[in-house]
Image 1: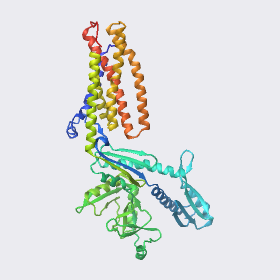
Image 2: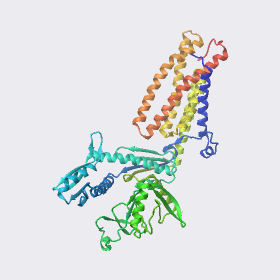
Image 3: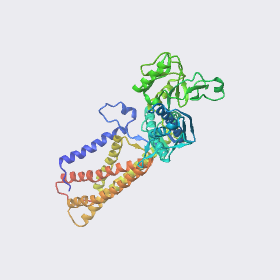
Amino acid sequence: MLNFSKAKIWSIFAVLIAGVVFALPNAFPENQVAAWPDFLPKAQMNLGLDLRGGSHILLEANSDSLFETRLETLETNVREEMRRAEGGAIAIGDVSLRGGQLRFMVRDVTRVDQAVDIARGLTTAVGVTGARDYDVTVQDGNRIVFGPTEAGQADAVDAAMLQAVEVIRRRIDEMGTREPTIIREGVDRVVVQVPGLDDPQALKDLLGQTAKLEFKMVDVEADPARIAAGRAPPGSEILPDAETGQPIVVKRRVIISGDQLTDAQQTFQQGSAVVSFNFDSTGARRFARVTQQNTGKPFAIILDDVVISAPRINEPILGGAGVISGNFTTASANELAILLRSGKLPVELNVIEERTVGADLGQDSIDAGIYSSILAVALVMVFMLVTYGRFGWYSNVALAFNIILMVGIMSLLGATLTLPGLAGFVLTVGAAVDANVLINERIREELRKGRRVMDSVATGYKEASTTIFDANITNIIAAIIMFWLGSGPIKGFAVVLTIGIATSVFTAVTVTRMFAHFWFERQQGRVQEITI
């Protein structure tokens, strides 16, 4: 039981050395570690919001805006499909978007059935039941109505929130922020935690914008009197100008949208900050066709229903690239470029809760955690040394390696250490010696029976190992359940606990048994008694 092959010994030493190497960067400041040669590991444990300080924001989706956008998209699709109907375009009119429904009238009663078939083809099946996001009905013989279904609305919110989480993640990554926590909470909320963020307002501004970019033609024929009265002509809408606040009338039809952008960068043009952009191949062809057909006319570049620029098309733009100019600073132009690169949010998100944790408070938590960890380790080591002598010393060395391995693994995995995780870290220090207590007490029991020292030690490790394994399996099951069902802090605790259990079993059983093997090998079997 105590015999170790050379291969096994070297493999154990390799694991311990690797743990030291990967844990070492945490003993140095981040700027010093960054200057190390590339062949050396540089990963450090990430500190969570409660330890490092930073911003916590809770966002809630505005479902009404989502459903309005979906209806507007549906209206555009209906118009296009009716124009392309087999047998010639189907004339429609009296289009209405009220009460969450899309209504329109088919002018030729003989083609109502054909229009209904086209309309039903535009609805989308969702869920395992094959339900649709809209029900299509006919009223008054020639009026077609799209009514949203509960299944369709629920599916739309779910899909929008999944996409929103990814867009938020891309935006924060573009800021260069390290290890943000972005978690969907409930049906329509997202929790965002960004450790170490010095400017929480910038984060709110970045996440609060939908970044829906659209290109539309300016309606130059609109009646100024109607505009002054706040009435837009049919097929047009009134939007504010970002610089002057004055109303601008634009066509409702979207020429091209930000979904077709492939890149956006902050650059300079004639000494002023601008945002340059590029379209994909489809967008480039559409942009070229529109600029060819509308040379000499103004078009509007619209971000979140605000006109940020309304340049005149002086000549066709055929290269699929363009520039957005305005009263940008370098910072605001860079922020807009980030928004465009990361894509638009599928739903408007409102900040309903905001908390800021100062760096000083985070440092206080770190200091308290370090002091409690040192005290816990010191007391446990004294207890083990006084109670079990030589084998207590083996346990203490194994405990030190256990801590090093935990830090090394968490650094290698890029895990984030939170305050509950720090509590789990301290807890595993005490739990780590449980295995050694079981082993040493079993060795004592065998010695009381009068067995030889080597046989007692071998039996102690053999018999206690089963109990140690079973006990830690139950702990790991509990940790897995906490990770699966819990949220941020609970997951952090579960991760640290799982890593601590794995490393403590390895160090408490395997490493201490190797130390016992070395001792008996040096004594060459001459050990007649042992104090334990």
